[in-house]
Image (cartoon, rainbow, N blue to C red; front, side):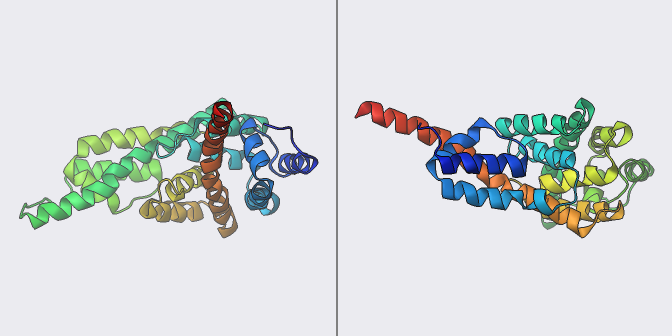
Length: 254
């Protein structure tokens, strides 16, 4: 496409100034609609101008939402991983973000098990509602490792304590061996649960409570929401290159 106009060059510099980086996937969006791009700069830059989170933490949050199984947006993972390194993140911290984000799949159970239990009761199936000694032990191990308990886990534990134990061990690795502070771990959980690609209210509520317990402020949690709210721009970062490709084909065919 054409070279950037003077206004577009100024907007590119403004983006770099306020967001701290540039990626080539922005070029075509800027060329196609500079007014829209300018509005996006203002929208996405708010937490960078007013927020209190460390820039490294902001970039780790972006890595988490892009790496979530509900999104898996490789260009964003790469761009924000590069930014995180530039702000001082270590490979161990980024791997820890991946480990924390990998638990998202368990929402199959935390969403599905309550429905299963309800339908089993409707079908007249009697269910044991008292934890065994082994299950009580696993519950205590979860609380010790993860720092909380939710009633969402009770029915899951009652239905299959072996699978629960395996999940406990899997989800506890970054808590047993990780380097990110607990509050930041909870920010990662909040981000992946509140993202528009997931919108898992029970998890959002649980992890907000946990973050507050670890000393998070309302401003910090609101900043997590602001950072995650820009996820919708991937409509453009994915769609615009396809549009440009089809425009080129159309020009060739004429």
